[in-house]
Image 1: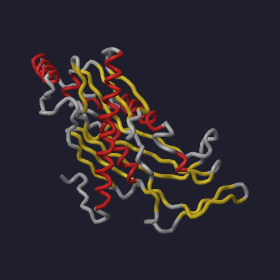
Image 2: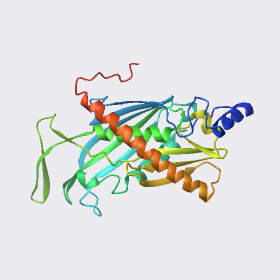
Image 3: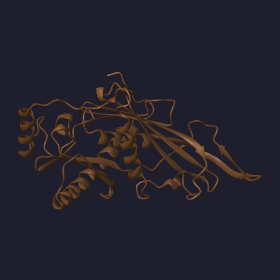
Image 4: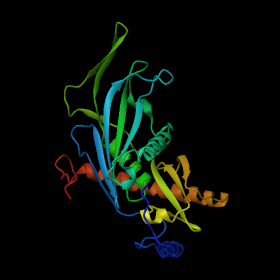
Length: 291
């Protein structure tokens, strides 16, 4: 992450604001900033989404290909994440500076989606033991301004929600080789059931309290952060910690409880926004990067 130089007075101001449950942008400790979200931005992929939270800007594209399933999981499809940190996102990403963060993000997403309750990969199966769909989720960090994990996870869920998989008309074995017949109609497709897909909730410890959706300045004042992947039923599918600070067991329990509730509310809000956008139909205005 990019480090923003803060004076001792600025850090003290942020710390006292968090203690008083009044952050420097007017939010309480459990309030998120407004999201700017748009899906189906790119014609060359099967699904896409762009999200902006404050100064954090993330673009996600999903491509679909026919592949062979893993031998130890022949009735399921495949899901692969790739993260690219643009050198323009922050000066610390120049050269190979963003590789560690990209690997951390892709691994966190893989852990979050590996639970069968989070995503049922059997819906990507075409012909067991022979053919399945493989989803390539490409994530581009355009700008990094705090709360990157939450923004990435929300953009990934929105992109997967908008993904249109070509409809399979038939699948058969011909001389031991699998033959998949796809629909000739490019508009005939199937959608993924994204209801249970998880999102991330980052709880940033500042002083004796934790805040959600931290800004880049607040992240500089934090000694430790807990990132939860939460499904709509408040179930946590994965958890990891970053930062040098420690947490008491009672504090961690409170973080898990509050993070699960916040994640469920955020999931419901995101799905409501995506369904509302769907109702606008194909004639909806696409803003894209023209703002």
